[in-house]
Image (cartoon, rainbow, N blue to C red; front, side):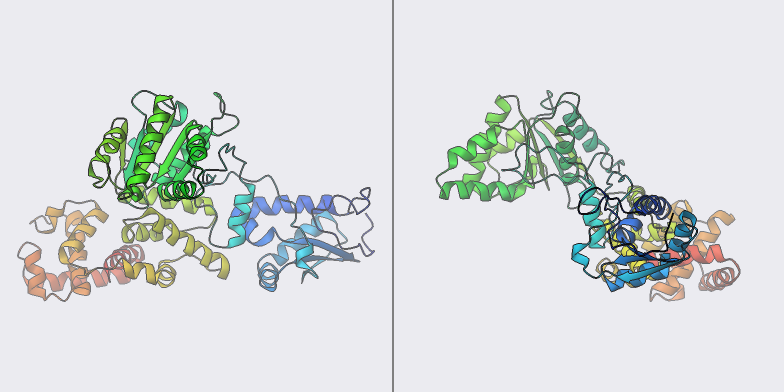
Length: 492
């Protein structure tokens, strides 16, 4: 191939020139390089940093690639410049140098071609906006027959992306059943309840996505998903515009109606009455209702009795607070989807520190991954504590000896009673010494006070434990990391 001539600037996605009959001479080579890059660096990394590269001119043994911003140009040049040069030389031996430059007109340059997109996974896009938009753009289109009325369904919130554990397995199973066979006896309505950030909205989107899937064996059905607040606003707007009949007909023509955060209807008597009549009309017509709230129907004080009774007559499923094991599973899934290596000790640290809200947990991990991507740094415990200081501070609490004993017992899988028992087996004595060491480091209790909390032991026993643990930490790196992890999880 002749490469010693200047080639007019064309983007990598260009298949032909403006007259439609001339292919870019290097487009096939470029497409193969793009595919290999995507395989090598991973989907998220590729879309965040490399997708916006475009193909520029060739001059003798040098080829130019354009990037839309100086930040991207400098980053790609420092991280991938050598690799790009090797790839181009492998494609065309005459090319020995790759020059990365700022695009003359970034707005006029469409992005480079990409390899087949991976299925979107919840949490896969990290904080950079370009990556999030790219994943959203690659998501498969979902049929939404009631788009004029309902909120859009998020393709990231699929059943496949939902991490199942003991606290949510029943709710997940019920949601799956409704998605497979809507209006099944005993499952209409389906009422999901639980605290903030436990997965209610995710399951509702998953139901809607499954039911509107074009390839669904039973055929796609019409779904209307909206928050209770939006239901109220649409109802008020219909009253003001004197179009309440049209509003009623729209709602009652769907096959599945999903209302999120029903608690927002408390105190809105007219809206509750309209929802009650819509509820009855749909159920009587054999249509499915799915509702979520922060409490069970019986605990939603402020709802009309007739509505509370109807909501409780179907399947009521709760999502409990997450366990440590479930939080670890969620973090592992998100970290794997991100393509960034996150050490297990960092995942354990986050799972111990952020315990109440899965959204906040995922947000903290995404923030760490974004920081690692933007600055080219590894994810470490030190970096985690630095980057997430504001989040961690909000979860700080005063450390007690009882809390230290419980955390250490869980970490080494011993009974809590062993902390104050007379057992001297090493498997028990070593964790007990670590707990004494941490009590001395993290609390203001005196040595005699600490000794009393550990089965009325003498203060000299506590002194020996502190000395022994300090010595072991200096000699054993793995042991020191365990103690450091426990300290970070406990300290304020």
